[in-house]
Length: 369
Ligand code: ADP
Ligand code: MG
Image (spheres, rainbow, N blue to C red):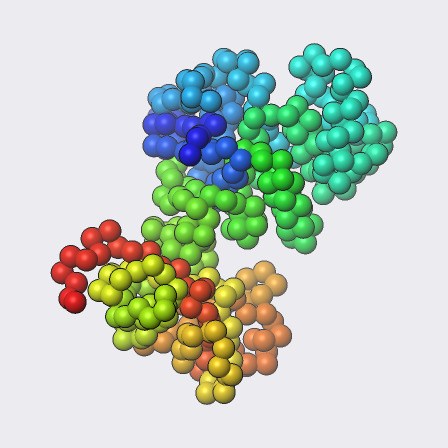
């Protein structure tokens, strides 16, 4: 794959405290990388370094195969950014969207056309003459995105673009933005501290903690079986479950984990040592002993609820079956119907395709059979 923009061996300190130690972060052409991490992890600093807005103490930034530095105006003009606060100035929406074009010295006629096109892209076609200061939070973020897109950048850097919006607007906008950036084949770094938002937008995910990237890769892999236990917790998962593949029949592996059989669709061989993950939203709960009709949901675990905690509008339940712990996301209605509480017994059901499997590197060593 070809990286459009890549950070290599980046180190940066403020007042002798190291805030960035990133060996590599690459933005591949046409893909969106979600950079996730708690506040203070170094996400904004890394974005600023990638955007040639900040100089690192050490390391290289490579843009289209060429090493570039913070002074490189030509490279900088091909990178657009948008931030949590849209920074709209007094004037019309059109003037705000055209701001980057004026900076780049584009003739007025082309400028109008580009502004109209960018507004159309973000769902605000024809809004040129409205006052920029009379917009809702969500509309203002659409305008900020239109401003970034209008310059037709090679790379788009978004620093918590939706963090100040209310949750409903936020998730709708995340979906809209992700779809249009995908359609445009844009190369994007999307910084957020919200894993639901990241799950909606990301092709690839990098999880940051204390200046370092502790887990990275395709979104499905990182979200389901993050290599790092801290990252698992941050992403709302229980730590991955370890197991050994007992047999594989018609592409479905039976994996023995802590005395429990789990079924997964995965390209593994008997004897392989693996780690498993199940996303909380893929687990459906029934009353203990319920007669669940046969279906493709091969995994049925009689569990005890160990913890139940509110998670936004839903609940998060930690379930235990023998030595296996999994998390489930439960609606409020379901939690009430099932009378969920710590100590309650439930039946957890999930498909073999919902179980993500990562093979341990030294998988076949010492495995029997
Ligand atoms: P994030 O975006 O993940 O919340 P930041 O990149 O903003 O994290 O900050 C990472 C760390 O660097 C924090 O501890 C922050 O206090 C520190 N930091 C950021 N910018 C500066 C600065 N200009 N001067 C001193 N410390 C800074
Ligand atoms: Mg930040």
